[in-house]
Length: 160
Ligand SMILES: CC(C)(COP(=O)(O)OP(=O)(O)OC[C@H]1O[C@@H](n2cnc3c(N)ncnc32)[C@H](O)[C@@H]1OP(=O)(O)O)[C@@H](O)C(=O)NCCC(=O)NCCS
Image 1: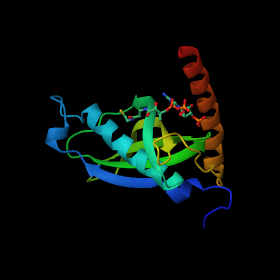
Image 2 (image 1 turned 90 degrees about the vertical axis):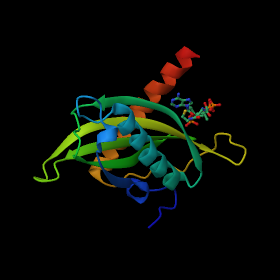
Image 3 (image 1 turned 45 degrees about the vertical axis):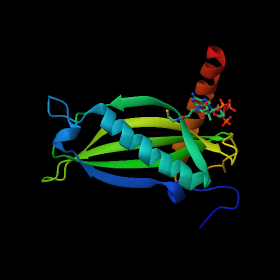
Image 4 (image 1 turned 180 degrees about the vertical axis):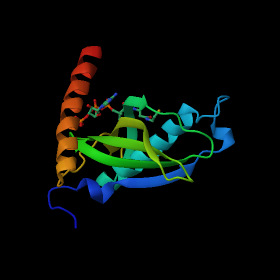
């Protein structure tokens, strides 16, 4: 059910799975980072679109951490969740889990935070509905994201 003042993270979250094929790997037989980043950008954009119901653009990707390699033949499960909305910008967190197709063993392989901006018909930034966190985990993500958003804004201000 849609909240009157905004949307819950679970209403827009996107999950998908891929199988790593040989053409997506580097000479060491592990997934090429750019392929994983493209998938991350895609699922995160879909979550942001579902949250705001508008066209979105990627404004930034940060805190991208390749924690564990993913090998040819591994399954990867990606989950994107909208953590926080400032005004027009939305922070989306993505987790990439590597799964052994035979044992089912799961390992957190890559994590990232992305910022998407909602656009109006004139391709200008426009307000997105607020996030309404409900579970303890969603509330924690919201509070952490709020701190990161403030830090990004301060950094952007200093750089301009
Ligand atoms: C992102 C973009 C729309 C921002 O436009 P802008 O004229 O700078 O607009 P504003 O300064 O009003 O910023 C709009 C929001 O984006 C946020 N923002 C802008 N640049 C950002 C960045 N690099 N990282 C994180 N947030 C950013 C601002 O903090 C602001 O957030 P708020 O409305 O929630 O307070 C514009 O820079 C753009 O179109 N970039 C190209 C996007 C693109 O082509 N992406 C595809 C990948 S190549």
